[in-house]
Image (cartoon, rainbow, N blue to C red; front, side):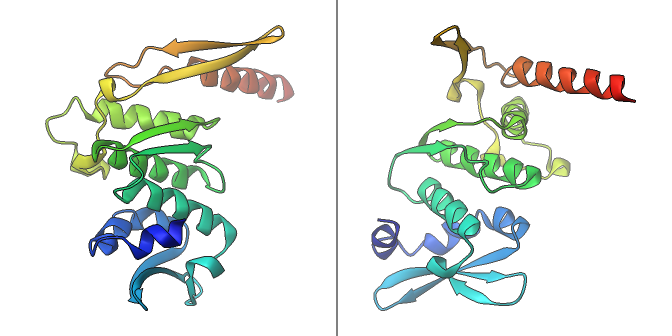
Length: 196
């Protein structure tokens, strides 16, 4: 499916995939797109100096590339992502949030599930950026990464007894409420304080 979409992609695919190069560089690989035998082929130059076609790249990089390409290519218009933080360390999770925000600002509808407080916190930062006329460059953000609160809906799923309860979270200019993550962090710190 991904290969088929790449073969039909516009000439701008190189600029699309390189718009996420900051994420790939964090993962130790630089994307390169080549037109071969009538199709666009994605390669990754790894930190070891090897250049590998997408199917031969490490599994984590292949999974991240599939998500990024789905987000940045014109089609599909709706992208479902289960745990975009999978295979990503905390800094890369933050960068993935920025790629997702850019896709939303380009008109994509993104539905995702996550257990990552890093991802939620970065989305909150990106939402807070929208209050600025121009995102503060000193923080390293680009204009296309700022998310307006009305573009984001967030829900918390909780188990109560033998049923699941869905709670809609109020997203405002400060971002997405992180109370649930904060509660768990406080529990961990309380135990740590007892241990020391």
